[in-house]
Amino acid sequence: MAVRRDESRLGPAVSALLEHLGLGGERVERFADGSLPVYAVGDRHVLKLYPEVYLPEEYDTELTVLRAVEGRLPIPTPRVMGAEHLEGWSYILMTRLRGESLAGAWPHIPRDDRMELAAIVGETLAALHSVSSSPAVDAAVGPPDWDGFLRTRRQECVAHHRADGLDEVWLAQIPGFLDSVELPPSAPVLLHTEVMREHLRVERDGDGWRPAGLFDFEPAMRGAREYEFASVGLFFSCAETGILRRLLLAYGYRECDLGEELSRRLLAYALLHRYSSLAWYLTRLPAPPRPTLDCLAAHWWAL
Image (cartoon, rainbow, N blue to C red; front, side, top):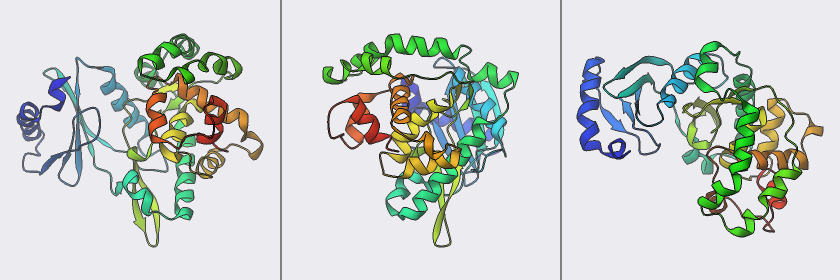
């Protein structure tokens, strides 16, 4: 874990790797964000490192999904230029996406352009969820038993959020809320699972804005379509009125589908998400009018 953050130890190895890849003369800068070491290599490449002793499946997942979605989505994704296991680490060398982070650009983007970006993200998720299954994708992204995954997450849900520091006022509501929400059967599809402003690039297009890239597929998995929109509501629309509605309509939902029951299902998936942290979400999103999960669903996934 520590070596991932120790640039004095990683730096020389990265330089040697780039020499091996014929990119030794390029300017190298480590990105500040992310749980794994990621470097900008000049203006055209990105190098991402994966320690094999720490969640080795992340490398296989990201490599497989990047290759599966290349050229198939309305928003560009990184193209794999090279990948290899090397001395206890794995790496992917990929093309660098254009533009700037949507997280930084969002405050400067007019309302109409935000709505158009939401529509394109919705179309992109529809395309992603339509990517045909293959033995390689199935082997890399799992889980092989979606229903079993949900059962386990439900059984561990309260303990997970208690360990994460969630207040008892919220913890006491979780079992009853989950029991009251029906999650209908769904054929598993390919999911990104962490669609957020930080994982999207945008650039100016005349007087407007357009998406320039979607990245970070290491947490991709196969599962129910609506599991995807848990993170979308938390990290893309962020409770801003109309944004999630526009995205879902562009995805393919009908007007009659958008209502209280869908909002409650999306909160249920957010509670069951493998990286869920309701305690943290409550510090970064607008507080609901009342401290209830039903109110939270209507407030954060407003439709």
